[in-house]
Amino acid sequence: MPYLIRYLVRCFDSADISDAADAAHNAFAELFVKWDTVENPRAWLRKVAFRQMLRQPVKGECSLDTPHKEPVVLSSAAQLELHEDERMILNALKKLPVTQRNVFALMYDQFTYSEISKIMNMNEDAVRQNAGRARKKMKELLGLTN
Image (tube, rainbow, N blue to C red; front, side):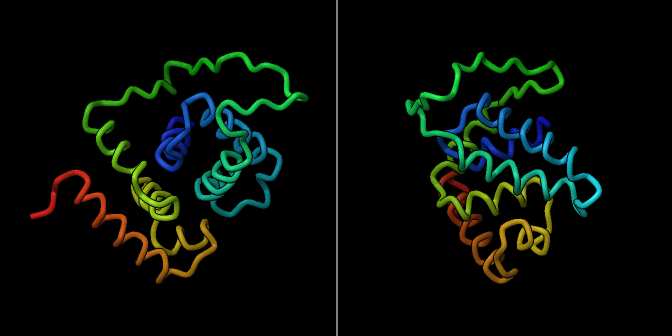
């Protein structure tokens, strides 16, 4: 769960931990129901949680039929303490286009290009191209270029 939440926070620049935790929880609940049909649960969770995040209302937007949510309290195992270097990386990630951000976040979670192409429904060459562009831009943003 903590890894899935971090993935979502990396992918969405406006995401807060409670939104990411909600999406991750919903994805795990859906996985429980579909367990027998899912080949790669790790990849499947990221794809479903990503879609859950896309469906969440924009900040400040309130649906009249949705009751007020209580704040999410994460267990000690799910605490997401971010160190200074992680904050720098997260801030740089937020400056990437969403496709590059998603590819980079999946690479960070150690998915292969082949797995990423299946998760994102794109061909492997497009994944490699987005990964290369994301790497280059991240190096610039983090001041790692010569």
